[in-house]
Image 1 (cartoon, one colour):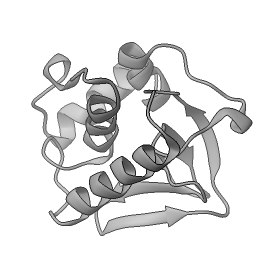
Image 2: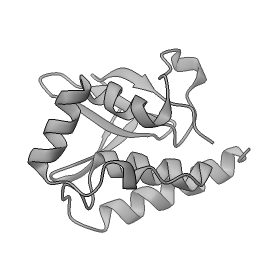
Image 3: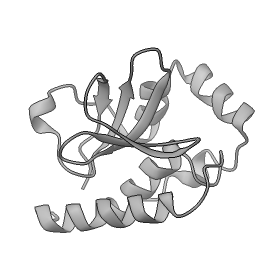
Length: 135
């Protein structure tokens, strides 16, 4: 099991890598941020199971799965809902006001998701739809 410090260092490295490149479906997006976190924390790479994809294919995959939580659960198992169990770098699906669901990583103070304009720290006004304890 990784220490709290190792989890934070992993989280920071993932966010720095992701935000150093432009957002692009199938190359650098919210689901791939989650997949990279899982690979770093567990050594398991799930991306061959759903890669590569375009924006249209990504939306279709999520829709056919029944939503983003169910799509990610196909690879990570049942999601958690007890927020007291969440740890830095755990994958999270959030729903913000007037927004569709997004996937990101728990920072310890909120959720960082990749979006079309880079990354955003969602501390207030977001609903955590589910998360997965990994690593």
